[in-house]
Amino acid sequence: MAVLALCSLLSSGCRSSDQPASFADALLTDIKEFSHPVIARAGLTPAELRAGDSATLVAAIKIKPGWHIYAPGGALRYTIPTRVETKLPEGMSATSDWTYPKGTLNGEDLVYEGSVVLTLPLRADQDLGPGRRSLVCSIYYVACEGMRCLPPEGQALQVDFEIVK
Image (cartoon, rainbow, N blue to C red):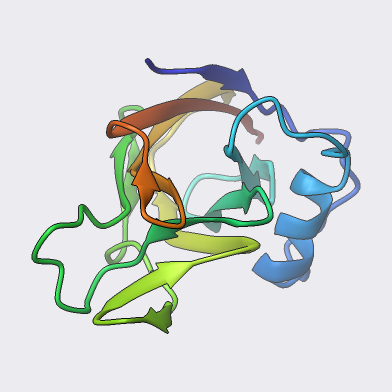
């Protein structure tokens, strides 16, 4: 079941000079308890762009202690790796693919534990007019505690941002 989270970051205080990891920390800082083994948040830094500007879409994932999700790579014979799909508004494009950090070896598989930060570089078209925009990144994963895994699931994260003159 998909969870829709609105991550409007215009007032977050994060600047384009912030590193994605510190930006991700800011996205996850208010998570004190887990209602689910995996909680994901997303944001764009900077949250205000001009036509032609670049930005980074950051997907931050926090994983409950004792749980893991699968990273791309490893044997993956019986596992489903974490993946992200992005729906960008007209006038925005990705300049490369999502960056997935290397996971930790767990048997023959690579896993993420604790937290993980995924990034996607974006660019606003030169002729993009001002206004509020939204994008959606959907994160798909299998969460496991030891050898017990939940069915595959995903979280759809909406990110709002502004194109300014």
